Length: 193
Image (cartoon, rainbow, N blue to C red; front, side, top):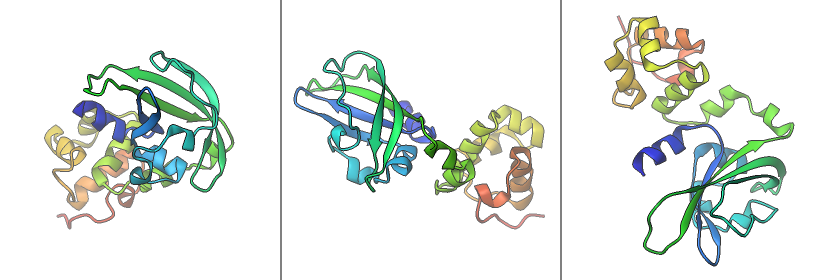
């Protein structure tokens, strides 16, 4: 499930991985987008009952895909209308629990207040910021490489965090193609020629 966890954390849509046992539905993992929306940290939510967050109970048969409108309750007790998409996952586990992915889409004016620049700037790792800006601009690594004349290998190393601080020229070329300031991706860059 390593690839799944990687994608789960990178995507900027609020998502929760839940563990459904015979007695309870608990939070197994959350992504950063969900933490920003709910106001809780990942540590606060680990193993918490899903009822802490969602007002309407989930259907009894949690082995089926379903969608429903509900209310998400934030840590500050703010109620946010959301559209919930519940998808069971095929995972083998010794305790016979079922895992499922809950994806949330905000259905209220709250969504309009979330400026994408602010959302991306909450992410601390430049590699993740770069991936998010590339996804927002719908640019693949190949397309970014071709547009900036920076090698695909360098782009890949930047996206994977193997190069933490590119030189100034590289940073400016990438930021220019993504139509953002260099500091929106890399708060600090190396001095270039």
